Every structure is written in structure tokens, then in C-alpha cells.
Image (cartoon, rainbow, N blue to C red; front, side, top):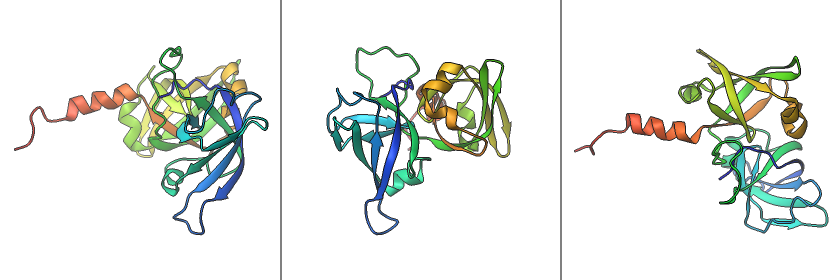
Length: 210
């Protein structure tokens, strides 16, 4: 479990094929900020751009760790198959502050940035989410974009999907990998966990089918 509060910006410095065919995934090497891995052990969970992954091996001196990502996970996420900046968040401890919102680290869909530009002291970010996710998105609700917990300012439904309007403060742009986004960028989206349960409660049959 995570909170969507990024604890470090890393770099995918290697994305090596885990096997000879497309059915195989990749082995990623992540370069982290200095001392980021001091409290990490093999088998720990770290969210990479919002996708929960397992640390397989790591090197404290070089501040790098490795993970294996399946072909299925690569197919359902964006930005984890190539080199570049990524948002990092270590798994939530039971006594940690919940600064963002409850995030599972399971990507629900891939969105597409339609607009990203400065407005006043902040940044205006707009993303089209898949149609299927539109019912979970609401004004002042929460959404996770590449692992970052953000607040929805406005939504606009269309046949193409649900466009989400988000305001990014300078701190978020400067301290996450979101500052590298541009129109056309693919992003990992996770809907609010509570919205998922509300839908189930509203749609599940009151009694078991006979």
C-alpha cells in the first residue's frame, strides 16, 4: 500500500530483456538518489511510476536496485520499458503519515496528456482517461498519475474518454518526474480505492443468484 507522495525520483538506466521472445518481460535497473536504499531489503515493494514492483537485488554503494517486470505488466503500464526518469515511493508503514490518499500500486489504465503548460505560478495538466475509468473520477476527488496523488479540479466526458483537469504546484513539478510530461505522453492512472468499493456496493446483487 502507498500514499501517492513521492519519496524520490529515480532513473531507469537499463531495461534488459528477460528472455528471447515477446512473452518474456524485462529486468530493470533503477538508479536512486543517494542513501535512498538504506532501509530497503530484498523483497520490499517500491512503486515505480505508480506500479508496485518487488526489489530483487540492490547495491547500496551504487544506489541502484533491480526488479523483474512481466510482459503482462509491461502491456498494462506506460513508461516502464524504456530509460528515463521515474517516480519512486516505498511501501507505506503502519505508523506513516497518510499525506496523499490510499494507493494500491495497481495501474487501472493508461491515460494520455492532452495539455501541460504553466499558468500563473502553477501548471495546468490535462489527461484523457479511458472511458471505463470516467465513472470513478469526480470533482475534488483523488487520482494517481504516475504514482503521484493529485486532486481533480474538473472533468469533461466525451466519446474519447474522460478528460481530467489538474493543477500542479511548483513543488510537485520540481520534486517528481511529472515535470517531464508533454502533450501526447502516456501516463499510468490509478483510481481512488474508495470509489472502487462504492461501485461494488452499489452494483452488487443484494442476494446471491439462485
